Length: 369
Image 1 (tube, helix red, strand yellow):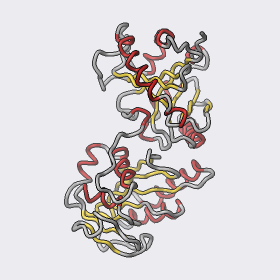
Image 2 (cartoon, rainbow, N blue to C red):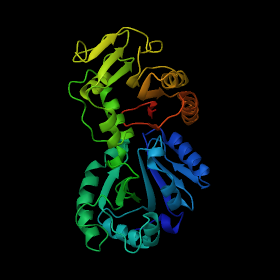
Image 3 (spheres, helix red, strand yellow):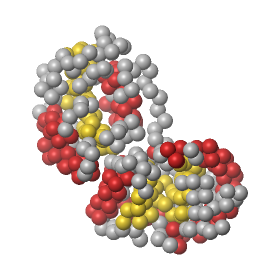
Image 4 (cartoon, one colour):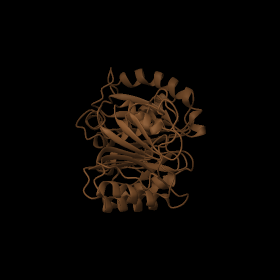
């Protein structure tokens, strides 16, 4: 049995998850963000795995400086500290514990802790790829066996403690895994970085789940309570068949649904919904609105410019909109469109973008005046 541990070879690495197929975009983003902070290294990717490793000698410092909320293509951000390969399926726990001991010094530094380190929770996960999902059963079983083995030497608290770093075990196969940690408040709380949210009931389309995820991912709890409440007014540009309108209605908003196409029940004829058959790229409200949402299929630069006009003219206070990305140079287009929006929108209090789990060839943006 051979064990490969990054702490004795390449050193710790920034480990991030993304939508399978978007590894080049995440690699480009991590490289750009690292360079902005004077950290120099290289990204290691495997196509369609949904995992990117950014290797540099200062990875623990980079992980602390690069906030998870500032990343667009990352579903999760971790500090990877060990890679285990050629494991014996009969005993994966012994080499894992040995890797933890060998990595103790870098773990303390990476977690910004002092003295003995204890993890507040254990997450055994797999990638969102077809091959990764086949490991779901192994992940559950291995997690159940590993927890008591970690508690005995004091690596894991007796009960989950959200204030402490979490230990992540990323399974690549039955014989290969990554060990990593995430810090409280600077990582996704969901395994794999995938939100566990239910489809909004009675939604007229599956796109409702996309806006629901955006609200829970891009807005803080305080922002959700303050900005989404009964009595506010919003507009949904390109609303048909009404999935995004339905999410706003359920939050208590009165919504102007702008689309030449028909709406479906329960949005059609709802007392909180006014359906205007108009072009979302030309229509403008008679008075300022609290919200504008937009999921129209159009060139991303054109959408960015139109969204910026809404903020520049004071037509809305908050917005969530999608930017459909091209097939090539998607990171470059993302940077260009967000810079264009930022330059033309005027002063903003918040601007966050993320490729959501329910997104495909697109990113979702939240902006607030």
